[in-house]
Structure formats: C-alpha cells, structure tokens
Length: 265
Image 1: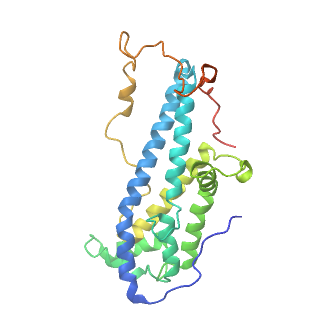
Image 2: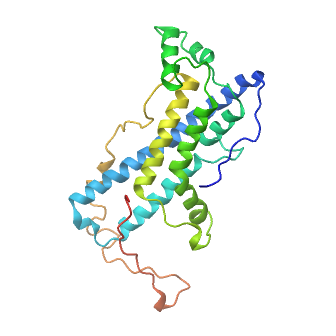
Image 3: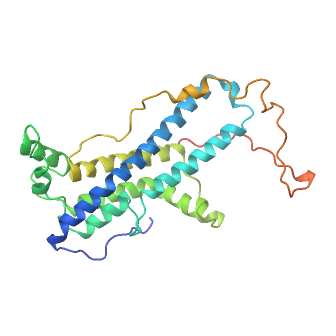
C-alpha cells in the first residue's frame, strides 16, 4: 500500500473558512473543464474502436492504431494524474480535499443551505441536498467522509500515477512498475474523479449533476466520411520508409506492429 499524503496538523480558526471556500470555488470551473475534456476524448476513443470492429480492413497495417492507442494511454494517464497532484501550487481535486482535511468543519449545513435562498423551495431543497451528499442530521461535512473520498480517487488512480511518474515524466528502472494501466482502469479512474468532483461541486456551489460529461453538439465522425488521401494528391500512397538524417541505410525505422492493448483483467 503506497504511503498517503495527509495533513500533519489541522487549523480550526473559523475566520478563514469563507476565504477558503471562495478559493476552492474558483478552482472548480478549471477542474470541470479538464474532466469534460478527458471524458470527451474517452468517448471518441471508444467510438473509434466500435468503428474499427465493423471494418476490420482498416486495422492493417497496424501502425496507425498502435500509435493512436499509445497516444491515448499517455494523454489520458497524464490527464488523470493532474487531478491527484498534492503540490501546494496545484489546483487539483486531490489538493482541494487535502486542504479540507486541514480545516475541520469548513463545509457546514448552515452555509450550504444559504445558497438555496432564491430557489423555489429554498431551505428545504438545501437540506435535501446536504442530506443526500453528507447524511441526514449532519451539521457539517465530517473528516471521515472527506478522507474516504480522497482515498477513493487515490486508489482508482494509483497505478496511473505510478505509470506517469515512472514511465512518462521520468524513466525509472523497469522493475519500478509491474505493468502499465489497463484501458478499463483508466476509465474507472476517470469515472471516480467525475463522481467525486460532482459531489464537491454540489456542496460548494449548489450545482447538482451526476456527471460533467458534456453532450457533443456535432458528429465528430464527419471527418471519417471522406477519404483522407485523395487519389492523385500530393500525398502518395507509395510512402517512403522513414530514415533518420543521421542514420545509415541499415538503420531504417520500422513501424511497430499493432498490439492487443490490455482492456481488462
């Protein structure tokens, strides 16, 4: 079990709560945009897999799809990793929960309910919202709940975090990680981040949603409806093998074969 970063001390002055809540609320739109972008890329990736299943001829040669899968794995892993960064300079979901652990009772029922003053049923809706997120009868968000939510996103993204740290951002010894994350582990981590974000977005802004996944306003597949390389164009089907300028003829680079990317266990 990896060592978890937790506050070594707590600050109980209530006077700082308003400033801190305002600070976290400023982070939320940026975190939301990042998660929406990751969810959008995830959607395109899996829809493209469905397209490939219906037309197996496009899978050979496999260089393009091998490159695409590698790029997807790296980009998504880095994207997930940013949300579990504990650096003080980071505006991440994990950092926000960490700071909440430093400030007991920073999210109270009384403060949350006040955000519903202009709603049709006002305080009643606010109490219902707090009950669903925190628990009936609770007057503040308990530290145990925050700690459990932080553990959820850490557990879901741990293999991804190590993969980015040991293979993408740095090049550690081969034994530093047992294997790369699987595609379903990436999806699971993203789903967990989405769920935890929605919970705290509701508590801090009174904006409720089950997911930040956006509905696409256009069909991204339109780009695939036309041939990419028109006959007679400047880009010839007789592509020349890639050779480094400083390489000898014997060191021509071959495109990697398409591999079966790990999806599940």
